[in-house]
Length: 479
Image (cartoon, rainbow, N blue to C red; front, side):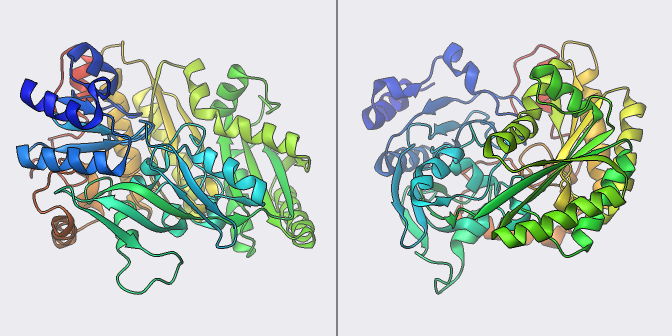
C-alpha cells in the first residue's frame, strides 16, 4: 500500500482508523457469503465529513471504494478487491426519534434492532426485520433493500426510507428524498435503495416508523408432510389474509435449531409454519381463527398458539437463529434467496430436494413462505475437496429453477458477486444497458463498488464464485 496515501487517509480519520497491514486486513476479506478478496486498505470514518473527504481522496487517486456495514451480507456485495474498503461501523448513532412525524434519523452503522429499541418507548417500531437484525446495519439494509419475516405485510426497506444524506463518487454530499412519503420530484432515494453501494454511500437515513399493534398472536402449525405446509401457505394468501409474517422451516432446519438450543420445535415433523397476525384485537381474533382453520383443514396435525410476548419471542428466536444453528450440521453453508410465486412453492421445494440428492449435499429450507422468498441453505464442508464447487453448482441450479417457475434471482440479499452471471436469465441486454446508464448517472467513473451485479464478460463459464473456489483450494484470491 502506498505510504503516502495511507498517511493522507490517517490525516482524515486518525491513525488507528486506517488498516493497511496484510495480517490486519484478513478479517475484511469477505462478508457473509462465500467469496473472498483482499482490500488494499480499510478506513473507518466517524462522520459524513470524513466519509466525504476519504471518497474525494480516493476519486483523486482513481481508487475504487467499497462501503461495508456489519459484514452480514450474503451475496458478496461488501467484498473489496484491491479497493479502499470504507467500514461504517463507527457511524452508529440514532440521531433523532420524532414520534410526532413517526420517523427516526439514523447513521448507517446503526444495528437494525436498535432502531426498534430506541422507538419502543414512544410506542413505535421499525418494520423491516432481517433474520440478522441483531447484527446487520441499516446502511447495509439500504444497499440491499433488505426484507425480513414481517415484510410480508409491512413491506421491505424501500417502503420505509423517506430520505437520506449520501456521499457521491466525487465526495460531494447531497440529500435525497424528503421528510414524508409524498416528496415532490424524482424518487432518487428509492433509486439508491437496493443499488448495492454502486450509486452512492448513505451517511444519514430517515426511516419511517410504525405504531406498535394493539394485539399480536403467533401460531406454530406442525405438518407431517412438506406439501401440506406449502399448500397451506397458498390457501392463507388466497383467503385474502395478509399475516404480519408467514415463515416455514423444514425438518433439517428444525433439527439444526433444536441442536443449537431447545426451542420446542417437533423433531418428527417434516415442516412447520410460523404465522403471526397483528392489528386491532378484534382483527387478530378474526384472522387468527381463520388461520387456524386453514392450517387444520390442510393437514396440520397440531396448531400451537402463542399470545404472551415471552412465548412469541421464543418461537421467533428459533426461526431467526436458524442460520447460525446450521453450524451444528456442517461448518459452511451457501444460502440462495431466489423467489417463486407462492402458488409454486410445492413444485419449487420438490425441485430443491432433487438438487440436494443430485449433488449429495443436505439442503435446509427456512424461508419467507408468504411471498415465496426461498432460503434453501446448502450445508457443506469447504475442507473437503470439491464440496465448495458442488455447493455453488447446486445453488446455480436452484436459481435457474426459480426463474423457470416465474420467479426471480433475489428477494432481499442482492445480486453482488453471487448471482451476477445469472442476470441474463431475467434481463435482456437492453435491460442491463439501461441499468448501467443509470449507475453512470450517479457514479460516472464506476468507482463505487465496481465489478458487482452486472455479468462480467460474455463467457458463461466466467463464474461469479471463482474467488471462493480458489480460496477453498488454499490460494490467495483476487477477484
